[in-house]
Image (cartoon, rainbow, N blue to C red; front, side, top):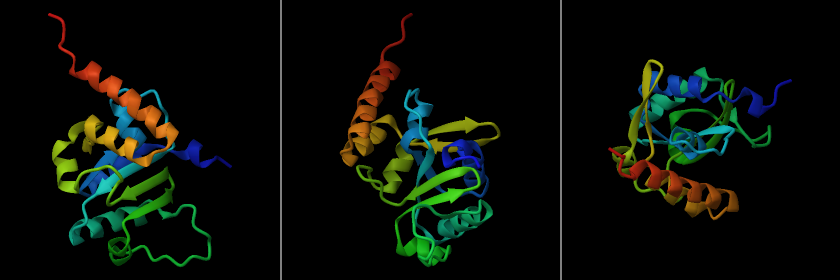
Length: 169
């Protein structure tokens, strides 16, 4: 049986969220990879808008993806509905395409409206997604305090310097 990491494919997850008009911003390792990070990741992390309509759309997508809580004991009751998502904030799911983490308030991130307005828009195949700015990714990685994330923040700073450097004529 394939492991979680073997199943991970962010493209179908991103496509499902985008096509359902879920208001989200890609954060974490997938966002870092879009800027050229050499660090690999085994999950898709997204920040999401908390308005009721968006929660409805998000839950419909999670249902279609067969999302179940990841890391929770099997006997923990959980109803996947907008009320449950509204009453929580950060959730880790396992889907048929791998792990998907949804974060209402990622550590180190600004308010969602600022995170969204500072994001870049990337085209993936026939859909678009917003990707958090490198500055916000750095702040989020620093906020975790984990050694791995501090290393990633250092790499992101280097990438930021390279991307912002004047281009030779």
